[in-house]
Length: 540
Image (cartoon, rainbow, N blue to C red; front, side, top):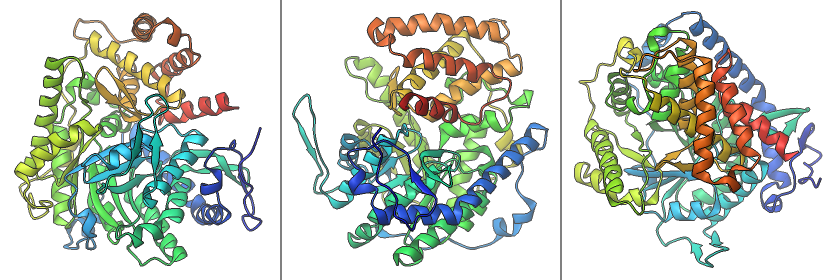
């Protein structure tokens, strides 16, 4: 099998074991690989330490220890400090669009009319080696302004408009390895590869254009994990001769533990902070994971865990209060709805849900929101324009918000239904099948599904089995019931996708993996970890 370029001699122990891609020459340059090597040598051990500390905390929570605000950091929470001044192109973030680093998506998102485009190497991205390297090339071309795409079927040409969104990049979380880059024989942190390649190739060019290297940081569970990111930023700025604080990063508050450390997270990143974001779907998944041993924390159907639930209101409003107190943006979350073609009434209902969601956010004090589809940018912009005439509303301090530990830990209320169980089965299997094909973001039943929403689907069923939860028809959710539902829903999936596509080997792989995830004795930390191993096996 052909191999990617060999790292320079100075990169002792670094090995590239991925297949050749069309972007190798532009992305995997000797100097870029040397930079990734330096980051990995310097910080790889600390990444492993933080992941070990995360596992230790999880074990304590499973044993019954309660999540709480940290007494040892009370001085930080009570202090009057603020984060550093924000750059001009991050002051107005009223609508942000997100999506994977696929070439056409990058162009359409930058041209969408949104203020910011978050280019994603994480939840909406399948990390095949080619996806990763070609995605980096796509971003290089976007920064240079030369990106262009010709649709092979229609012949239509896509290129950048005169005015584009500000580019922000989301690397993988600390937990995800990059098996195709190894140091001393071990896979390195995917986060350091994603960050390192993008930063090395683009930081100076971005600064020359009047913008900067901006990032979203996912899956954070503690301020100490953010301290590690901050040290990576300081090291990288020195290495490329950039001024201290040139990097800006927004941290996704998408885990329950992080909700108890918002002030501390902003404090650690205060020179590099551009705020916090309400990553609502991963947050719901984290409600299950962090309290998996607690029978009082069993969730109702996914569709009933709305942003109107008291615990979700407490969490999102605490984000606003915390950020505005520190002088920085509080970003709202993603509405999963997408425009529906060919069904006017269904499309109206979907847009009404988006409208209500964005109206709640702007009235609560959020400084911006997320959409997953260019077609929703005008609607979200209209709502924020009507209720937020300035570039943001950081001056709304929300001192009325008092989110206690009890409110954050309050379990969402509702029912569990057979329809909810079966919907979880179909969504989980359909998403995993797409992910294993290399597609990390896919519309399913008129919602945009990514790894975060699939995590809810599989962990919720696991939780119901673990605690013997009952459906509203009185049946207890047990392994046999779930196995039967999976078999029946596979028949429905076959009818929906067609026999030809259903014959692909990715469907039995997805079914087997989903069944393993929901029936296993222990809750897997992330579905993308065993899925990545399947991906690697298929590639080899």
